[in-house]
Image 1: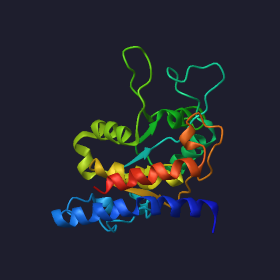
Image 2: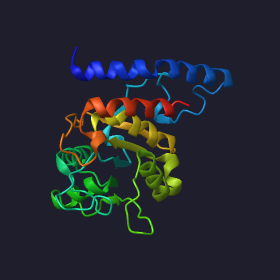
Image 3: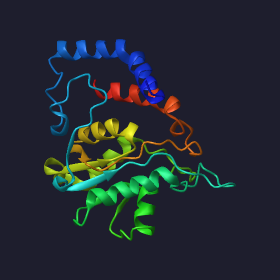
Image 4: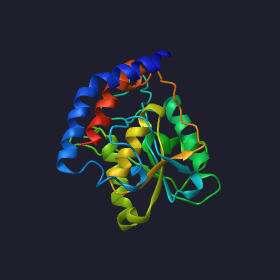
Length: 226
């Protein structure tokens, strides 16, 4: 058994009891699948790892979630968005692969948008940036926060949108499910490889290894089932 598989199994075990309680509560309330977004309609209530997929060509937009960054020496990370780093460079490549030669809008977090513009000349990418507090410090932009911003930008189109979700391999289930929670038919673009190697030099400590990241991510997945 691989080390990642062991970590995944440990994370699943850690949330299994709580997951059972959530499932029982949902069934008692009669809401286990009634409100499931279209992109996850066929997913079992406690399936915490299967990501729904569809052909990239069926997407009406692409939503790309960043994963980690690189913080240059001497930079105040509380006020400056980090450099993309290798994982976000791979995520940008996945956006390009998913988009192909079609003119569909791409919504990407800042770190990915930067690479799409500088390396691939994608001048029409819509960058999803974090907000700032009154003192100029960055306000952390969560997965849910990104999805909410994209949904706000799409407006009434959300009801008919088919969103291809680009995200780090271990983040894609939660990214796809969160996108769907905001009304999108959300799926992984079939045949497009997502990066799966952690960056031990990431400026975000929780994205440096599977050991640190997966338990928190699985807890987040469980929360989406409520």
